Length: 368
Ligand code: SF4
Image 1: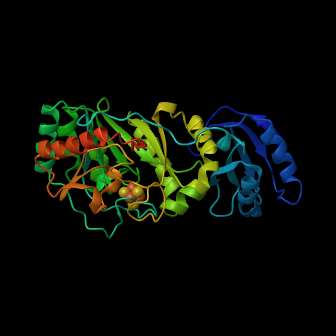
Image 2 (image 1 turned 135 degrees about the vertical axis):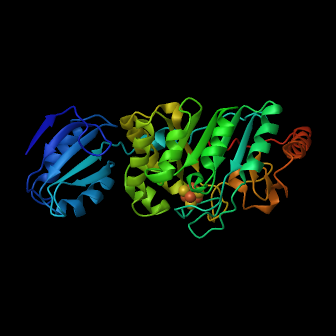
Image 3 (image 1 turned 120 degrees about the horizontal axis):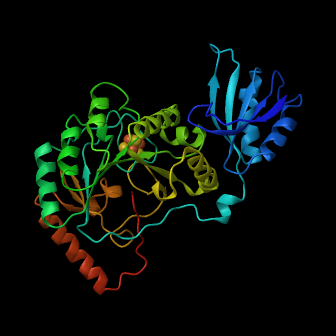
């Protein structure tokens, strides 16, 4: 076995700092010692590329990595199911996540400066914490293009500065391209996406048609390696999200990454930051937030008029206090998304009463 310094990116999207050839050794015959030494030879946040011809390593290594505080990022099979394999292992530091704050914060945006549009409610995934209760079987509830355009016109006329398009998976909306083009000609647009459906066909064309200067993609990635992400969002979704992130960046888009974590998974936050360092995602393009107790999630952050700052949100069938609360009838502002001025007036009145009542303890819960 030997360890060498390498420079090229040779395992998925990850950039290894060093390489270990484990040959045919298994975890019971010396590999763990050489692996432990190799991990000590790289810095926290760096990636080791492990080559192995021993299949049992694929079974044993995830448990070792978890116990050692590292993260198995990906496994590449260079044969047809029989190896050899290349494994990317992120060096973690078990204490980092509890020593540093994991969740990213945010400043409240002045009411009326940001507008959220739910383009649709169906999704290729059915994540266990989805606040919108989206899934492949969900009623699409498509936001018509003319309603979106009218809302955008009103928003811009009133001084709006940023449009955010979410769902469901927005790239499943047949008019997403036109909707985003209409918006991005007027204000910067952020699209929240799982990055899994725009790789080919008309959705790829839609993506490629978008203005790189005015459109940002915010992609969900809950963990450095696939274990947590796939548990929350579905098997194989982590790998496909990474492919989508790579494609979007290749096409010249600014990509933000957003993670959603439960309290019991906070210790993974440090490794996620390290992985994003490795991918070259800027710190300001990372959002780590708690699960909100909305939609499919039974527990998490309590969302109410008093606990989250207002973020006007329009769906085909109404307007809401915040994008994380579109299944919560207590936070429905109006039964119609239009006119936007009425929606904002109601929200301003509520806010004024809260301010007058010195509503302390309200948290900023930013989704971007
Ligand atoms: S969280 Fe996002 S990706 Fe997951 S089901 Fe909901 S809308 Fe789809």
